[in-house]
Image (cartoon, rainbow, N blue to C red; front, side, top):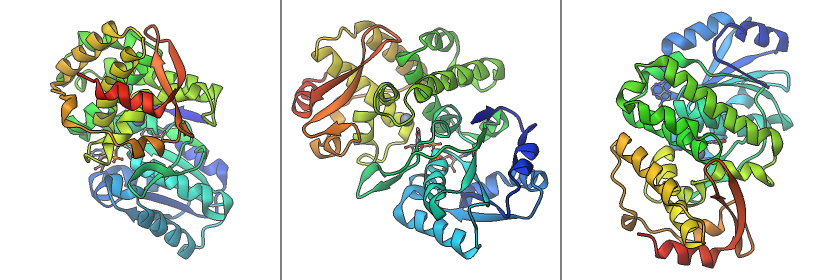
Length: 338
Ligand SMILES: NC(=O)c1ccc[n+]([C@@H]2O[C@H](COP(=O)([O-])OP(=O)(O)OC[C@H]3O[C@@H](n4cnc5c(N)ncnc54)[C@H](O)[C@@H]3O)[C@@H](O)[C@H]2O)c1
Ligand SMILES: [Zn+2]
């Protein structure tokens, strides 16, 4: 599965698939916002392009929305030889990937990620999901897209918050593998990063490389891939409860997990200084006392087993260890957070 940074190969890949029908799934607002790009895709595919619309943001990842997609697929008489294009942020690629993996036991799809977060993270690696009963990514599968078209032009329309969301995963990539990311970030004013396509491109390439490094070694997420979950165990527990965007939840999650790691005996002063520097650059004022983590949401984490959980901690910068700790120990460390 390849990641392309331009449309050059799109027609060829779609044509080679020889699909009996081609369907594009996107959200209602993105249909309007990205009208020009959708028309461009229409011209690049060899047959008619049906469009299926779903709710926006996390609402796309509700059971009802999955049902809506599968209903539309059925009503359009899609077969295992059909091709689906998922156009949107991580919420779209997550739910469309899931729908494609279960419809007739598997149908091909292409991801066209349109947010920074989806381009560096969510669209890559084949994890699909919806949320369920208040828990993040409770239902999901592993199902790779046949290709990913991460086109930089989409990023021009993102607002500041959406941009910071993507930077959160880039910062995570810095902590778990490639600390050069911080060198690049500290030299840049975040507000100006969007006007510097060459620098942004470098950051995107680096974050994609980090994601691919872990996915290649452990596709099914049984070991080292869990490094990519750094900041997510506690981040996910906050995300739905406090209606935070995924990226902000991850940044707060990194803060809390660094604190926990320190209580567990991992020296994290340097890492905390780097993170605080990142918060300053992004204008984030984080007070951990405003948030309470529920024990239950940690129990529902996919990395928990019995009363234990796999918890990624950074030993040296760029060196990750996956600890198995008891949830009780984790909560106790968290309560001492300052
Ligand atoms: N599967 C994975 O490996 C993985 C990894 C990381 C995150 N995720 C998931 O991804 C989701 C977050 O993804 P996201 O941050 O892309 O959010 P999102 O998909 O919810 O999109 C956020 C907002 O951006 C808008 N948007 C999208 N593209 C735009 C564009 N080009 N211009 C202007 N607005 C645009 C959307 O309409 C939406 O309102 C979460 O549900 C998270 O769990 C999955
Ligand atoms: Zn994430």
